[in-house]
Length: 132
Image (cartoon, rainbow, N blue to C red):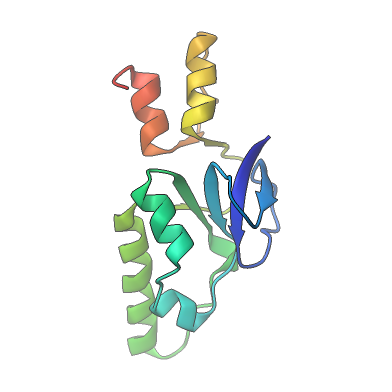
């Protein structure tokens, strides 16, 4: 099983990772964030993983509920947009399976394709398309 660094609480859904708190790891799963963590997101381990091209997933049920304050809600939406722009992949733990680069290489070597609806990391997509 692929190892993922867990930030926050463990997701309520099975995402297909064995969670670790120390390196080595192949991906990062952000299981939960508080309002202040989301607004001022600067988790060094996550930023380093993104810089290294590792997959980073944010479990959306672990996000704080939308506040009734419109200005605060707008700031939270902007913070989420920034995370997406950085390459963080959002998942609700539904039936969509996350396919990492490692899994994509294995699938490609077997001549297989991921399940319909699978979520591919950007590198996994390149591998399956044959550009990496």
